[in-house]
Amino acid sequence: MQKILRKNCDMKRRFALLSFLTMSILFQINASEIIICGGFEPKSEMFGIEMTQTHTVEKPVITPNSSVLNGPTNVNITCPTSGAIIYFTTNGTNPIPGGSATHVFVGPFAIFQNTTLKALAVKNNIRSQISTSVLTFSTNPVHANAPVITPGSGSFSGPQTISISCSTPNSTIYFTTTGNTPVVGTSFTRIYTGPFQLPLTGTIKALAVKSGMGNSPVSSSYISINSPSIVATPVIFPAAGSYSGPITIMLSSSTPGAVIYYTTSGNVPNPGSSFTRIYNGPFQLPASATVRAMAIKSNMASSGILVSSYSIVNPTIVSNPVITPASGFYMGPQTVTISSSTPGSIIYYTLTGNTPVLGAGFTKLYTGPFVLPASATIKAMAVKQGFIGSAVVTVNLSIVVNGGFTREKVAEEQLNPVSTNSLIVFPNPSSGLVSIKWENQVEKDVEFIVFNSLGTEVSKFTFPEGQMEVKMDFSELKSGIYFIKSGVSSDIKRLVIK
Image (cartoon, rainbow, N blue to C red):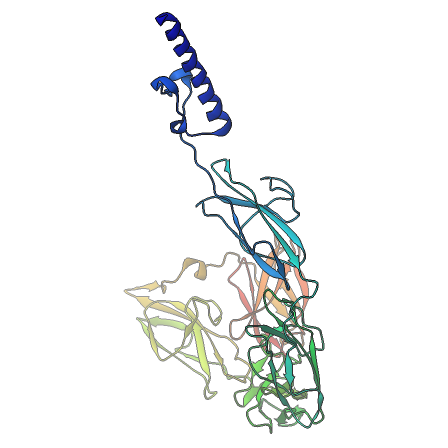
């Protein structure tokens, strides 16, 4: 009898174990929740199967939940289970991670039509139950009230201050002054933040928007300004014409507080562009040019464009610098002075044999006499605002110290050109068309850079391989002094454009 009972108990234990394993695999039931008769407790090492506790992922929460809406609404989805990934659909189908109709929720989004939302949360391959929210738009939605534009349509004798309001609390007003219907997000549609000036005739359109409500009807106001306030066109002195030397240009506008913008390149002034300057006071015009100017003022229409052309027949050139001592042989260090007879001129010089180029590391500003302790080649030029820069003056000083010659210590690449192939530029001065010639053929393409007297790069060109001469057109450059330098030689040539 005991043998039969023991056998029955073994059968019960085996059946209980089989039931436990089946339930654990299929339904992921916690092992501690299974009660087995006879005090039997299944062990993880039995049958080599590891049994662990499992966890659930809570359902996502969709806001708003199923409801009737008055207008476009933002939808948010959250999950109480931290770290869970939320998947959702908007077509009423169940979310399937990786499915074409399934999206990963990354933040609130707007809906504009009847929509059935379904959401699923997943963490560690465990899936939550699916949440559903049916959102229906009312057939008689509540709209934001139409904005009120003040003043209303009409004719006025001068600029008008425009204000827009809406009686719907917390609504946002969008408007245009171009006659276009406001479209949120477009460049011609602005958010209303406060009253603004309308200086000229225009059509104002506005609408109000509020989340959860339909957009308001579009309000319009047609404003006609019969006598708009226009900034007075600038006046220039002296008048356009031909002059024998540099002239001082003065600009003015009879509109108080107006800001004048001008160009000397012939371009129409465009505030903010590189070629347009703000007029701060009289300026020098050293060479022939066309001056264009306009005046602007807040809440007024911009002025017309002033155009005045000038022909400078004999532009003034800064006097050449005088370097003392002159070229020659000297015993011991020498004190060098450089001067120009043009009052107010600024002198730049080098001790390396290079032609002075403003902004270059080897070019120095002359501030007074200096001592030259060793042999050097000094080159100097003088410049002045409103004048054409002087020619470059050169002296070679050979200094004997302790019975022998010495040389001023300068960078080797500055003393010794990479190439001894001399550069020739003719005619010089030129009206713009010049020939540039090497004494020998170049063995590769060589790039040339053209600098103005301030050291600013103004042009580039390439000397083709195997050529000895090229013709260039610099007629687009203003009258003045320029410098041409190659990329393979320290030789710099001065070019005068008439």
